[in-house]
Image (cartoon, rainbow, N blue to C red):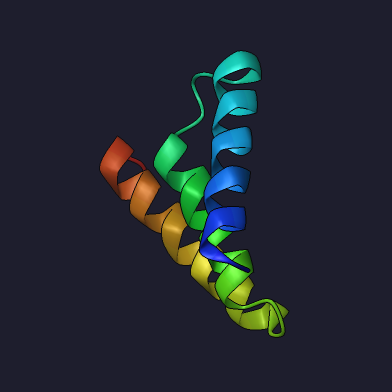
Length: 64
Protein backbone atom coordinates (compact mmCIF):
# COMPACT_ATOMS: atom_id res chain seq x y z
CA UNK A 1 0.00 0.00 0.00
CA UNK A 2 1.28 3.45 -0.77
CA UNK A 3 2.41 5.53 2.18
CA UNK A 4 -0.29 8.14 1.58
CA UNK A 5 -3.00 5.46 1.45
CA UNK A 6 -1.73 3.81 4.63
CA UNK A 7 -1.65 7.16 6.41
CA UNK A 8 -5.21 7.95 5.30
CA UNK A 9 -6.42 4.52 6.39
CA UNK A 10 -4.80 4.91 9.81
CA UNK A 11 -6.44 8.32 10.22
CA UNK A 12 -9.88 6.88 9.43
CA UNK A 13 -9.38 3.91 11.74
CA UNK A 14 -8.28 6.21 14.54
CA UNK A 15 -11.25 8.53 14.00
CA UNK A 16 -13.70 5.64 14.16
CA UNK A 17 -11.89 4.23 17.20
CA UNK A 18 -12.05 7.55 19.04
CA UNK A 19 -15.76 7.96 18.28
CA UNK A 20 -16.96 4.41 18.92
CA UNK A 21 -14.37 2.76 21.17
CA UNK A 22 -12.12 5.37 22.78
CA UNK A 23 -10.95 2.80 25.32
CA UNK A 24 -9.39 0.68 22.56
CA UNK A 25 -5.63 1.19 22.38
CA UNK A 26 -4.72 3.27 19.30
CA UNK A 27 -1.25 1.78 19.10
CA UNK A 28 -2.65 -1.72 18.97
CA UNK A 29 -5.02 -0.81 16.15
CA UNK A 30 -2.17 0.77 14.23
CA UNK A 31 -0.11 -2.39 14.71
CA UNK A 32 -2.99 -4.47 13.32
CA UNK A 33 -3.37 -2.27 10.24
CA UNK A 34 0.39 -2.26 9.64
CA UNK A 35 0.62 -6.06 10.07
CA UNK A 36 -2.16 -6.59 7.55
CA UNK A 37 -0.49 -4.20 5.12
CA UNK A 38 2.98 -5.69 5.54
CA UNK A 39 1.82 -9.30 5.26
CA UNK A 40 -0.90 -8.88 2.66
CA UNK A 41 0.04 -12.11 0.88
CA UNK A 42 0.72 -14.13 4.06
CA UNK A 43 -2.25 -14.28 6.43
CA UNK A 44 -0.40 -16.63 8.80
CA UNK A 45 2.39 -14.11 9.26
CA UNK A 46 -0.13 -11.27 9.62
CA UNK A 47 -1.89 -13.23 12.36
CA UNK A 48 1.43 -13.87 14.10
CA UNK A 49 2.29 -10.16 14.02
CA UNK A 50 -1.15 -9.26 15.40
CA UNK A 51 -0.77 -11.83 18.18
CA UNK A 52 2.58 -10.30 19.09
CA UNK A 53 1.00 -6.84 19.19
CA UNK A 54 -1.75 -8.17 21.44
CA UNK A 55 0.77 -9.81 23.77
CA UNK A 56 2.68 -6.53 23.99
CA UNK A 57 -0.53 -4.64 24.79
CA UNK A 58 -1.56 -7.11 27.48
CA UNK A 59 1.90 -6.96 29.03
CA UNK A 60 1.75 -3.16 29.02
CA UNK A 61 -1.70 -3.24 30.62
CA UNK A 62 -0.62 -5.79 33.24
CA UNK A 63 -2.39 -8.77 31.73
CA UNK A 64 -1.01 -12.11 30.69
